Length: 374
Image 1 (cartoon, one colour):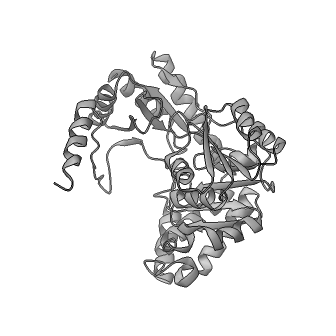
Image 2 (image 1 turned 120 degrees about the vertical axis):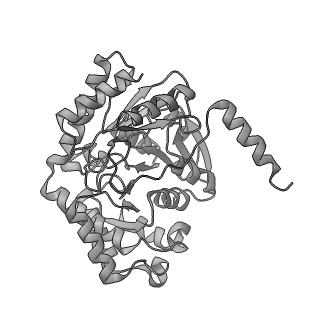
């Protein structure tokens, strides 16, 4: 049979405890949510949902085509200008998803003959960008600056290092300032995925590159998502104007993809403006993460100290992680469950996301439930 091999893979997944299933969530879930990436609690904020509706009523339900044909609106330009200004970069380009933004940045900035040095802990979208790039990719050990220098030192020609700012599994931050220094020793560029830093790190949530003093640097390109702290959907690439102009002309996920839906652009713009007015949300998200970590370690659990808003709790096996997450759900708490291949080190985890709108009482309740269901 043409697809008979699928049955064999399905059986192997079942034996390894790695079967994934879709679970639709109700519009008004009774669960306490520590599973989503809504770090600032804005996805259901009335300002953001009203802005999404207003944009749809004005511009329509969809972008109607690629950004270069019919998909660019005044709203897209407004969002790009305000994103670039907020994060401290010269220019920005909005994409239909953060995944598409990462594919664009890596593939368009790693031409034939170039070298891409990629951190072993990078997100799948960066990994796929490396696979699609025409340059040669060398994967280095997680946050190993000596390995980055060694890789760059053996190459003659264009090169970029690629790294998450905050790694999505354990929530640890990359040493961005030192990584930029290493790149500059070899005149290499740096591409940073700040999906988990925007809205949480930096001055008022301006992101990890801004916190590391890299905002606006001519040799640094940053990708962000609009689907986490900004409570919407989509992605963007930030950087020097010549780089952004190059992406408009060379990035396939920009040229050939339908533009970001107006509702998502409107929601993201409203969230960005709200964050400007309420910068304390960023500090609160970090404080909630710290409180979760302190409570979990006090319960005797192995939790990784968070650098942003992700708290990782180790589980003894994939099966136990699935059962643990299910028991939490039955107790009224939604948590993430990460298993191979989502975790390259093979260690399964519960993944908790801190939200700025969680109360101290909710934090204490979450810690009790996780401890009781271990």
